[in-house]
Image 1 (cartoon, rainbow, N blue to C red):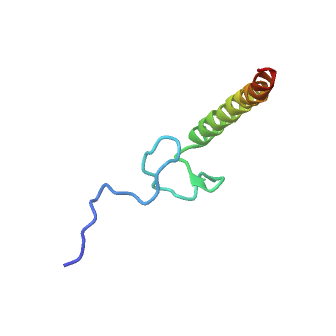
Image 2: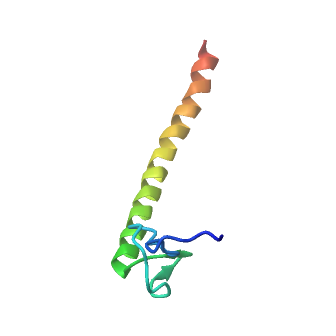
Length: 75
């Protein structure tokens, strides 16, 4: 006997909300499917904020790494 899929299992889900998408071609952006344009814009905004935060933290980590050898050299 073959496997039976549940009726509520969908092939495409929104990358932002996780909801099932019935019209799969409507909002396909950057290799992902979205349920609405608003969901796509929200995800894009969230990703941009994460990149900005990571970029802001990166120089701090580099400064700490640069300071550590200087302190060791003084000893």
